[in-house]
Image 1 (cartoon, rainbow, N blue to C red):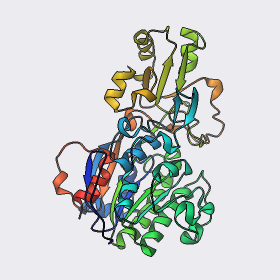
Image 2: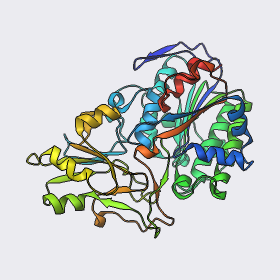
Image 3: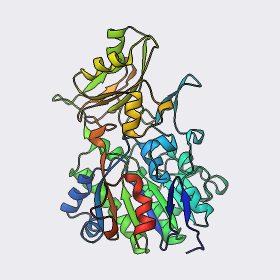
Image 4: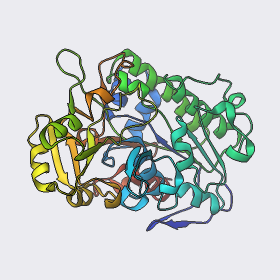
Length: 409
């Protein structure tokens, strides 16, 4: 290992890695995906971790979306500190609805950049390019996305040939191959370069379509198992968690079970008096049609927040409706980037804006999605025993690097 210095960042301290450390965020992974693959006999490496390593059920960040949770994992803190509270938000200053992919929205540094600054060789591979700039902010090292693996350069990404590294063709963004490319790159980098710290983040294309235990889901986790076994064989300490779980979000007829909240509010309060923002929104709408189980609502100044909250809370399918301060306190969110109200739908229901604004033609399977409290519980696995944390305080997915660097040996 390099001469790496311990670091302190965002109120937490971390030891230097004694062995290569690999942190993995399996997008959309609830615990049952792993246990079902193990039960089917197709995931022997996962089986060995469940038997001889550490396995926990932990809480993800709410809203249970990709950007807030990945950034919490790599900063070690909740969105109230790092500022990334969705994939998408309403920027009051710009008076515009925008993606939260730009590092200018990040309010603190990442562990990845700090470790690289302390002398560690750091590599980051993410499935979708939407995360690359955030994960790689300030990082001197390797950082690229499978989505744009054909466009890497040494100057921008820290390597010259990602396709040659893996021996795989450029994958489609709407495929399991996108995640396989991440793991193939991670295994190849570990075997070729042996980075001190590596972060791998996948896509939830499979989980949006397949429930745990289905043949396609088991095949996907069998693929992951094979690559993680390769990485472990190189001597890496591996930690795995998820950004969120996944649930069926359709009715008895197989149609999405949707509360079109903007339509409801326009009908009850008058058009133009509220703005519903869906933080799940991203460029990859085929996955979910921009339908998730969390929304934030901006109200005209003349509308009473309390009465509007009560109206929304009474709607069938709404699990929780909170005013901004209460929601930000409960979920550790930045108040200046949230609306006047936060709405969470129940386990099998999603929230939309207006029916006319959602193109669901790309959904080729009954909708599975995320965003709410029902997708908050996720796995956290480490291929080493962690006796110091057994029976302790409930863990969060963003404790992953603390466990890998401070407890696993």
